[in-house]
Length: 456
Image (cartoon, rainbow, N blue to C red; front, top):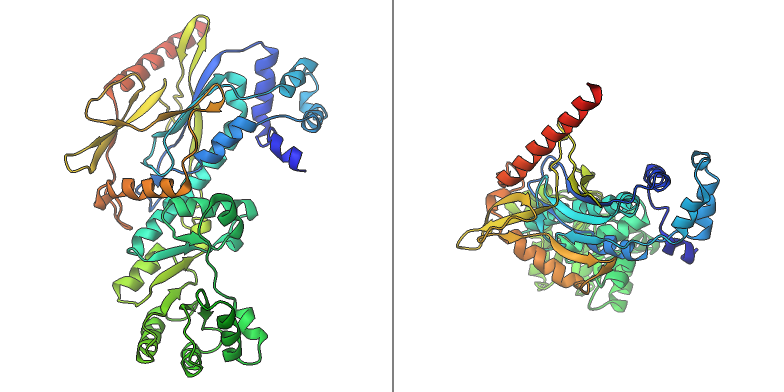
């Protein structure tokens, strides 16, 4: 099983492989450039925060087709007219291309390329599905996390969503993306082990219910976890549970509220704790929270010290998908480079390799972006896309996840505050350069001429 998982070649859509076979049989070997971007931001999103590049690059370095996968493809009726040569090609398949990408933890906006691949066209085609899945999913979660963390106003947010995620694998990567977006940690233990993310946990209602008396459950838990015990107090009666904690002279690190009127309960719990001298015991709140409920609680003065956010975060519940696309922008062959663009209504794409140019003001706040041709130069701008892979190998070690999270925090602060508002945010200005617009017009005109000549 482990060996099969390492191959990863079949982690793609069938049409990627049928196109690959058609390229192979027709001896179409041109080098191609594809760019991955999100057409437009979802509702209630004024920015995206990039994540998922690490998994994409790991995939590119390791993607293979094993014998079992190749034999499976041979048996598919759709490949009935495909030669043995194609399957021999898959046996030796490796990604040998070049990748430019926006570093993880960078705010981006609609139409801006997150990644560009340049490779022999079969290689560049086969990897499309995995790249889209990896980058758009984690970017979606990291973007949501950044909003939740902003709403929490420097209070800790813990990602609690693995049990609500769309499968264990999604939960694992959601934890990683949420940490990049600013969460203090996760409840997912494997994410902690694999990615070095701090892990947090409390207790479930079942632990309290397993004992005849609520206070016995609290005592036994506190004895075993004196420095880390978080006692769940809403199994029966929240305020009565606090009274029991005080009467038994327990000193929990925190108490957790998971239901009810969180504003009223947190206020009354805080009063009881303070009156009993438990000023250091923090109040941790959870229970179907999102950035809006958190912002509302804090605006109304809720004395809550930290939040656990599950479903809304691990599924990005209000915007569960990103319209990511992966489009051909040029072909390089013996006759030179040919630019490609799509002209269908509302789905036009721009040709040629691009760069995102980001312009800061004197105070370091970002003013606007220009999407331009890669060859353009702007002395007062920073180019976001960086060369991260050459000849199928990463050119630098992967940054540690703490550095990615720090980068995200610093970069988000440079986006105008009006662009980060939870509601009615001001759109961040993104423009296409004149050179890129001119190239699009030229390619459109050339394409029309070719089409007219064919029908004349």
